[in-house]
Length: 414
Ligand SMILES: Nc1ncnc2c1ncn2[C@@H]1O[C@H](COP(=O)(O)OP(=O)(O)OP(=O)(O)O)[C@@H](O)[C@H]1O
Ligand SMILES: [Mg+2]
Picture 1 (cartoon, rainbow, N blue to C red):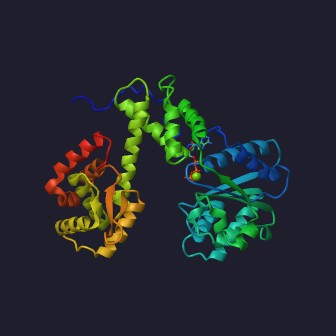
Picture 2: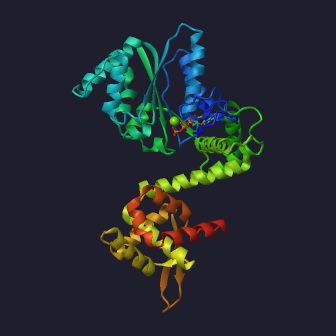
Picture 3: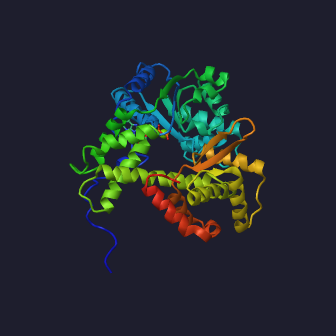
């Protein structure tokens, strides 16, 4: 049998730059944030107590990458002196409570395992003794701080560590994926931490061009990416989310598509195709993870009416259709009032839109609903992932699919 794999990877040099744990050797842009970071850490180089720093902003904006880069610069600077710098990193995504973080730190500092049975005060003693044994300057990086309760004892205790430590100086670098993080901290924690706050803004298209271009040169072989690929990926990402991770995923997917098709170069159309795929994946994930069965039945009711009547659907018709789907799904229908709440949720997710009509005095007011995501994506996903739901729409599934395909070719969803 002919192998389904291909041996000739002609496009990628390496895929590491697309990996979430990749630390780019250089940071593109972010001059102000880097300068603020360096200014705060200068105290360590000058032999003063380390600062506390809070780095915050939305996802994929280079907070972790910039922190690792700055800490490498600091290590290099101190390697020329007789000073010792220890950096302890904790992933609060995994250790999302004070107790779990404390236990993790106690384990790390003592190279043994502390079981659930230890009290907090015992663990604090172990941690402080461990930090003192290390001595000199210690930076504790808490990445994913938003997973900890903002009023956590951990930050409060750590901000007062200088009163407990004899031989060591501790600085805390907290990184939070939340652009309003510092406002959520209580006054007593903010006052005790007295942190330098560094906010990371969304990237614009020109920032993203620099970042994507940099990763492109590391990841792809010379000359295989057309000149208009990075600007297009950057423009699409700036419009959508403004974060580097989304742009990098788009670029990697475009490369994968080009490779699968046996193309010699990555082109604009691979990026466009990759974007459509990424959107479909997002829509599919929201449909199956964020929405309940009742939401799904309601959405499918709006969708069926839209497709079969080629028009927006009035609430009464949606309710009727939904009740029929409930019968087929063998589930009890909800009241009209609950349905309106459910429709609001689907609306907030961007899955449907509502138009309000007002026929003036005596004419009444009513709403109509239209789907805003690709019905083909939903229908294909149901076919692949949910046999029960597929059964519910089975009666006219083929007709729905055909109409959806035809409408989408004409660039309209309904
Ligand atoms: N300014 C930049 N220069 C170079 N690469 C960058 C830059 N910003 C982001 N990146 C790239 O994007 C990837 C994601 O960035 P990073 O992990 O630092 O984001 P983050 O802000 O920590 O996101 P999260 O809040 O989700 O943890 C990095 O691995 C890096 O490759
Ligand atoms: Mg991060």
